[in-house]
Image (cartoon, rainbow over all chains, first blue to last red; front, top):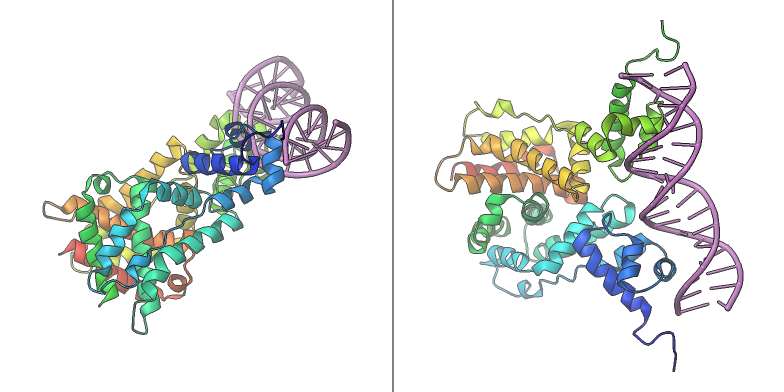
Length: 182
Length: 182
DNA sequence: GTCTATACGACGATAGAC
DNA sequence: GTCTATCGTCGTATAGAC
C-alpha cells in the first residue's frame, strides 16, 4: 500500500477539475492554480502532466456530438430534426463550445474549433446532400446553426432566448430544409 | 517649441496604437507594454490615461457600422442589399468584431458585443419588418448574418471563403428576404 | 498636469531535490 | 511521482521628477 496516494490518480483528478472549470469560467478565467486547488494537487503537477495550460485545455474540451440518428432518418424532416438535436444537446455542449469559441485565437484552439464545427455541423449534412453545390449548401447550413448558437449563447439575444424551442426548431428547421432539398 | 513632445498628445498616440494592435492581435494577444512601446510611451501612462486595459479596449473597439442606406431602400431587395453591405464592410470591421467576440467573457466586453450585434444587425431590419412576429424574424436575420461572419472569420470555413461574394450575397440574401417579406 | 521609475502580486512555466 | 524554489512576464498602483 501507498501512504501518499490513497485516491485515484492525480492525473484524472486534474483532468476532471479542468473540465469543470474550463466549461464554467472559460480559458482566460481559469488559472492553473485554480485547477490544482480544485484537484487538491500541486500547481506544478498540472503543467508536468499535461505540458502546458493550452494542452490541458485542448485535451479536456472535446465535443462528443455525434448526430448519428440523423444519418438514416428521412430526408424530409431532416432540417428540423437537425436543429432539434442541436438545441437539445445540453449544458455541457454549450460550455465547451463557448470556451472553444472565445479561446480561438491561438493556432491550436482555432483548429480545434474548426474540427468541431466541421465534424458536428457540416459533415453530417454534407453526406446527405446532392447536387454540384452540395458542399456550399452544407456550409451554409452549418453557418446557420453556428449563428443560432452564437446568438443564443455568445450574444444572449433575448428575443431568441425567450422563444419556445419548438418554435425555433420549426422556423430554423424550415430554412435548413430549403438548403437540404431545394 | 517643445523638445520632448513634438507629436500629438500621447493620449491619442496610445489610442491609435491600441486600436491597431487590438484589431490585429486581439485582446489577449496584446499587452499593455506592447501598446506603450508602439506609442513610444511609458507603460504606466497607458493605465493612467485609460484606467485599465479593458477600459482602453472598450474605448477603442467601437464599430461604426451604420447601414443607413438600407433604411430607405426598397423592401424588395433588402435581404441581398443587407448581406452585401455587411460583406463589403472592410478589414477594420472584421478585426473589431473578432476581437470583441473572443474577449466577450467579462461583463463589459460581453455587453458591448451585444450592443454591436443589436445596433448593427437587429435594429436596422427590425424597423422595417411588420407582423406580430417581427421581433423574432429580425433576431433570426441577425443570427444568420452573425453565423456568416462566424463561419468566415472565426472558423475560417474554406467552402464559404472560396465562394464568390456575389454568390453568397444572392443565396444568403434570398434567405433573409424570406424573413423580411414572408 | 504630464510623464517616468520602480515595485507589487499573480500568472504560466521550469529545474532539481526527495 | 511529487513538491520546493524560482524565473520572466503580465496588469496595475504609487511616489515623485519635470
